[in-house]
Amino acid sequence: MAKNKPKPQYSDAFFVDNLVLRHERTQHVYDRCGDKVIDALFGIAVILPNFSRTAEIDEVSAIVKKTIESIFAEFQGEIARVDKLVTDNGITLSPRYSNPKNLAVRITSPRAGSFVGLFRKLDELLMGIDKLWFAEVWDESQKRKAVREASNRVLAAATEIFKLHKRAHLARQRKESAAQGNAPKTETAKADTKDIEAIAPAQDAVTASDASPVDSAAPTPAAATSTPAAEAPETAATDTPQPARRKKTVAV
Image: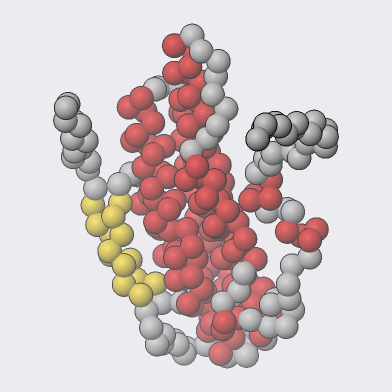
């Protein structure tokens, strides 16, 4: 019997980024999408170009870069606005956090390093929001809204990156099918769909520290259909009646 060939072991470049997340919501968002997005970015930047180099894959890479840079700039603007409020109100307190999380993040592509930078900015912004809350410059409602909106920006970027990763896979499949003279494949990697479904429902979630009767209310059916997971194609049920099978008579 022929022995199965061992899978090739590749030697990919990487470095370890020591990431410290203090705020509970930042930790929650990273747990939802951090490592998955890093894997998707590795696929876009490293794996797919090894199989095919198409204009569509280059376009996907450019969109990913623009998406991350746009949110990074938004966070910088929000941090500057919060810091100004802290200074104008003479706030000198700096709250501590009971359970900061220290992560050794494996960075495998340039965009992965940029995406991890979003978590640092998110953590910095949320800590500034806590200062305004402790000093009673912002009330509980203002705090919840600001925390939720900032968190959702990162989750929305993660969902967009997964969609772009699927799009790059489709481009690769079309090129391979055209080279083989076959019809283009339309199916996508199952892992990508699962990742989007895992992240999309969490976009409006709140952690225990930010929960309120309004935020914890169950979503309506209309709202549920707006998530990316709900947009996944489903197999339509067939209404055509099936002919009844005839029973075979057996002589005794």
